[in-house]
Structure formats: structure tokens, C-alpha cells
Length: 242
Image 1: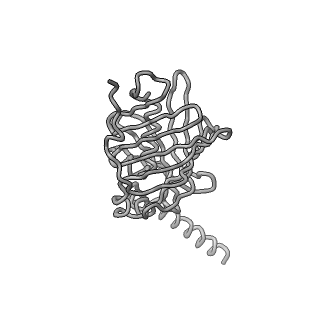
Image 2: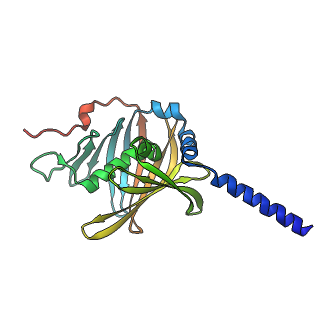
Image 3: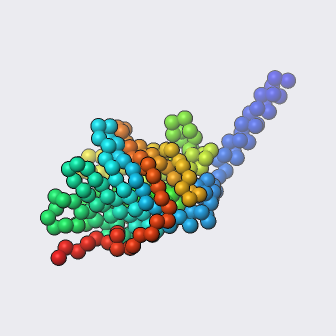
């Protein structure tokens, strides 16, 4: 009797495992779209205006962000020492600081990547990378903290790789990791997505913790998000210095 019970339990566990492992990337993507609010609600969210702060532990830096489909983002950072603009119109990524007498200039690649990642997260990391034509490979499941997650490797056309982790229960993005070489140093960046809240029917993380080489570097907190605010395209275009 005990042996039969053991066989039944083993069979049940195997069936659960087969079921959980039978999902492919298309299945996970479909569930991710549903979890975030559904295709119609996501398509209707075309722009966002965001107020927030970046916390480094010792400092809290206020910012505003405007994002607009497709691929437009502008971040205004205000501190006691400076006002800075980081922006992209989907073609040119640029920065304007009070320290540069030339006015707005093209942004260094490392910072440009960070701005693109911010846009992707606000409009859905997995969806954005898929729409941009990344190759996707499902690498199985891994634990993120105490949570089981699907690990998907996204490979961009230029060869850059990032791993996207999808919560196996909620199907929302919970982690992103990538590696790069800056100078002579290998740098691993890990972002954790937390505090999901609904904005115009779409689930968006309101807190992002970023770790660099296993050390918490900063936390980005979105305190208020407005949906579908009117924004002129010129807001994202790099101004020309006379």
C-alpha cells in the first residue's frame, strides 16, 4: 500500500513537472501579455509622464520622465547642483548638462543603453525586446529569491545579451541581468522589478533595484505615473546649438 502511494506521488510530481516544463517562449509571452493587462490595454497605453526619485542610500535625486511610443524617452534630473536632460527620439540618444558649453551632445553608449532599458521596462521588458527583433531562447527555470522564474535569454542584433526572468506564477518580469566590459573591467548589472501597480489597466513596476557586481547601486522609485499625456515629438529631439 505504501509502495502504491509512493508511486502515485511520484507520478503526480512527474506530471506537474512535465506540465510546467512544456511551456515554450510563445506560451510565456502570451501569459505575460495577459498578466500585464491584455493586448488591448497595453496598445492603448501610448505615453506616460512619471515623477520619481533615485535613491543611492545617502542621496535622493528627484526626476521626471516622459515616455512615448515608439522609443521616445526624456528624463529630467534636478539636484541642488545641476539640471540634466537625458533623452532619445528613437534615433539619436543625447544628454544636456550645465557642464558642457556645447549644449546637447550625443550620449555615451553605456548611458544610452540604460535609457533604452528604462523605456523597455515602462512599456514591458519582454514585449519591447521581442518587438525589437531580439532572438529569444528559453533556458528553463531558476529561483529568483524564493520565486520560481522562467529564464529567457534575449540576444540583440549587435550580439548584446540580457537574461529576462519571468515569475512562473504571475508571469510578470521580476529580474534582468547583463554583462559588459567597461574599460578593462567586467561589469554585471542585475535589475529587480518590484511593487507592480496598475496604470490605465496595465501593470507597471514602481520600484527597480539595480545591483552592479552584486552590490546595490541604487533604487529607482516611481511615485506617480500619468497615462496618455499629450507630448510633442520635439520634446525628444536633440536641440541644435546655434
